[in-house]
Every structure is written in structure tokens, then in C-alpha cells.
Length: 535
Ligand SMILES: NC(=O)C1=CN([C@@H]2O[C@H](COP(=O)(O)OP(=O)(O)OC[C@H]3O[C@@H](n4cnc5c(N)ncnc54)[C@H](OP(=O)(O)O)[C@@H]3O)[C@@H](O)[C@H]2O)[C@@H](O)CC1
Ligand SMILES: Nc1ncnc2c1ncn2[C@@H]1O[C@H](COP(=O)(O)OP(=O)(O)O)[C@@H](O)[C@H]1O
Ligand SMILES: [K+]
Image 1 (spheres, rainbow, N blue to C red):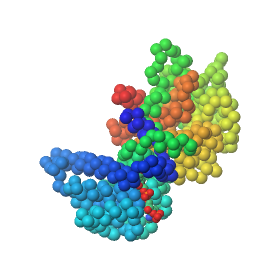
Image 2: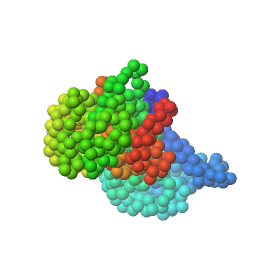
Image 3: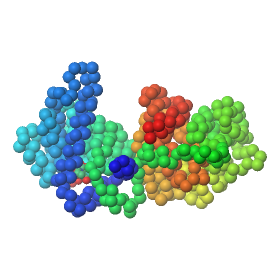
Image 4: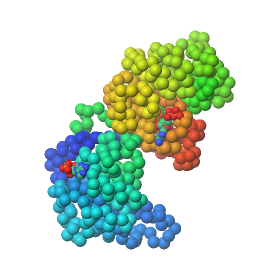
């Protein structure tokens, strides 16, 4: 059972894939009407839980708590397809549980099953309106206008109705997806319902994990309705997969537990190349991120003038002071005697370098190490216009751009804001690198087309220096994994997950304003300790 839950939690589907899975279930003999009844029954129960919970929270300390709450008024927004059918079954169930139910349905042509449910609800005396105003006094709205069958831009009257109800500031629970969102890209098709909760049915829809959808999705959760794993596998096996990073997948790639007999060089040696006189903080934050990764040995190449400050901040690290340009950037890499780049298990290069450090980039590109490029490392790479040469590197390259850096690196990929999954997949295919596109829902792709999405994070991370911490953290994980058989892209995904989880914990304790990058580094180990204890 747990195994099924974990498998399901990792799956992300497009509308077409969900449609194909649905078809297999129906072809195998499951009656459509039975499936709708089952799914909507689960939705109705979950809605009651959510609603009662929110009432209890609102009434904390007051006398009248559930289950003896007075019947509440629920508005059901009904579309023409089976999303509307689901909503109408929910309407009926809530009515029988004592709720006052009002239906909004502005469509004259409904799918047959949906139409039958509407007819029965009418026969029970549930009022049905083709304008939205009568629902204004409802305590709760259920959005069953459109699900994964929506393909066209919304027009009036339903578009204006959605705009109007979004103004009401009422709790809205969307069935499957907030109506108006594109199932795959999360794009708003004209307008869309701003939900407080989204109950995604069966399998996670890709659009719910795209940045542009997040203002509409609210709290999202999955309602598992027992889709056979064999059907999922049969549909997904022939297309590039898109996976949700889960706690289980992330923890499974961490270098824990350590073998009892080991030594510092066996636990990875990371070389960070970062910082400039202008940006010394970036080097410190990258170093602190790497420290939290647990890496066995940490060397940090910085301009000579940063050496003393780095030693003071990271006494355990080997600080390599390099000759610097007039502007205070690293002019050339000057490694200690008997050391060359092959002495390191991984290199992470970029934060705070400035573009004046460009001569060192060719040197790290020529190295035979796993290499992570971030920030100015990426900007210099973009100027060099040699992204295709990454394919020729002996070991994997990891690129960690934010959207601006991504556009400079991959100017011919237009979709970086629109369909981040597609854009990241294309970037990885073009470059041969593992590409991590930063954002509210960070996306990671490898050149074979597999994509991971980090499903949880916090806007607390939207401040300078958060990315530097990520670079150090992933760099440290890469160095530790170099002798193990773990895919680099999975390590990168784990780094993204860990970074976000630390920020979520920090934000819980300190509010979303309390997660500066330095504070974040203190939560990396704290979140891991609390997560591992709960395992
Ligand atoms: N997968 C599963 O296993 C299960 C799925 N289930 C549920 O089914 C849902 C999918 O149902 P669905 O396929 O009927 O599509 P849905 O999202 O209701 O809407 C499409 C309808 O809208 C119409 N239409 C489209 N665009 C329009 C526009 N701009 N303006 C106006 N109309 C527009 C379009 O008709 P058209 O005009 O194109 O002929 C079509 O009739 C899914 O999200 C889930 O809730 C569960 O019940 C059971 C298990
Ligand atoms: N709204 C957000 N929600 C969640 N995470 C975010 C958000 N905005 C930014 N982040 C995360 O914060 C980090 C910012 O990195 P970056 O832009 O490189 O910052 P810097 O270069 O200042 O260190 C990334 O990991 C990104 O995914
Ligand atoms: K919906």
C-alpha cells in the first residue's frame, strides 16, 4: 500500500496521457458511471473534511463546533463535461449530508452522464442557475467547470462568471484543476478560477506544477482512486518521463548512512571556484552550502584578497588564494603544488565571479571532472557561445540557471516562462548537460529527456544568495557521489528538494521574511535531522 502511494506520488501526467490511461480502464470494463461515482464520493468526503477543519479553525475557542455545525451553503460550479459530472455527484452527496446546495450551470449542451446527474439533482429540488449571482452568499464554492478536457480559451458567459467569483474572496475547492488552466502548461486560458484548494484526481497533472499556475492552485492534494499501476506504466513507458521529487526519492540518494570505515577523501573532495572583491558574500554562502552537504574535503578558490575572510568563515576548508585582475576577479586558477583539477571529485564554479573571470572558464570546461556551472559561470558560458561543446566533456556538466540566465544560454528556446518543463527538457537535449531551471517549482532535466519537478517550496527563497547556497550544496553532493552509482540528475534533484525543505522549515519558524541565505544554511542540517528522524 505504502509502495503504491509512493509510486503514484512520483507520477506526473499530461492531459493526453491521463486520457489514454482513462481509456484503458474503460476498455477493460470499468463503467464510466461507476468510476465517476467512486471518484466523486472520495471528493465529497475530502471536501467535508477540509470544510469542517477550516470551520473548526475559524471557530477555535467558540462553543458550536462540528459535527453539529448549522447546514452550510455550498455553490457548485458545473461545466459541460465529466468535471461537471463529478461536481454534480458531489452536489448530491453534500445535499444528503445536510448542506444547502446551489448549482450554477450556464451550459445548455452537456455530456450525457453530466446531464443525467443534473436532471436528478433538479428532481431533488436543488436550485440550478445560469447566472453566478445567486451563489454570492455561499460559504464554499466547488469548481467543477473544466478539468483535463479543457483545450480552448474561455469565453463569456463563463469567463465573466469566473472573474466575478474570483472577486468574492470565498473558499473555492477545484476538482482536478482550477478551471481555465491548461492541463500541461498551467497557462491561464483567458481566465481561471483562483482556488484555495485543488483536489487533483488520480495522478498529478503537469500544469499544477508549473510556475504560472501557482497563483491559481492553492493547496494541492492528490485523490488516489486506485488506477492500476499496470495501466499507468503501459501509457507512460514509451514517452519521456516527468517525475515529482518525493521525500523518499530524495533521501534515497543522500550519502547516508556513511560506511563506518572511511576517510575524508573517500567522502568526496569538492573544488568551489567563486567570489570576487565585489562579491565576497557569494563565495561565503556557496562555501556554507557545501559545508552542509557533509562533503569530506572542501577546497575553495577565490581571489587572493578574499582569503582571510574565507578562512575566518570556513575554517575547515582549504582556501586557495588566486592571482586577481585589477577589478578583483580571479585572473587564473593557481592550485597548490602537486594538485591539479583531476585531484577533485567535482567542481562547482560561478557564484560571485564576475565576467572578468572569463579566462578560467575554458580551464574548468577542459577538466575531466563532474562540473556544475552557476551564475557568472553561466553568463561567461553564454558569451562564449560554446554550449554544444559541453557534449564533448568526459564527465557530466550541470547547469543551474534562473530564468534570466537560461534565456541568455538558450536564446532559441522561447518557452522558459511558458512551459518550463518543455524548455528545460530542450535545453538538456541541446547541451547534453543536466539542466536545473530555478523557480518556484524548480525543474531538472537530463539529455535523455527525463524531467524531475520539485513540488514544494516557499517564496521565502526569493532573495539574493539563495542560489549560491544551492550551488555549494549540490556541488558537495556531486563530490560525495562520484564513486557511487547514482545518476547525477538524481543528485541534483535531491539538492533542490533539500534546499527547499530547509527553506520551508525556516519559514515556518521565522516567517517568509526570515529566510536570508545565511540563515538558510543553518536549516539545511536541521531539516535533514528532523526528516530522517521521522523516516
Ligand atoms: N481521468 C479519469 O479517470 C477520470 C476523470 N474524471 C473527470 O473527468 C474530467 C475530464 O472530463 P472531460 O473529458 O469530459 O472534460 P472536462 O474537463 O469536463 O471539460 C471538457 C468539456 O468542456 C467543453 N469545453 C472545452 N473547452 C471549452 C470552452 N472553452 N468553453 C466551453 N466549453 C468547453 C468540451 O466540449 P466541446 O465543446 O469541446 O465539445 C467538454 O465537454 C476530469 O477532469 C475529471 O474531473 C472523473 O470523473 C473520473 C475519472
Ligand atoms: N518564489 C519562489 N518560490 C520558491 N523558490 C524560489 C522562489 N524564487 C526563487 N526561489 C529559489 O531561490 C533560489 C534563487 O536562486 P538565484 O536566483 O540563483 O539567486 P542568487 O543568484 O541571488 O543566489 C533558487 O533555488 C530558486 O528556485
Ligand atoms: K475544475
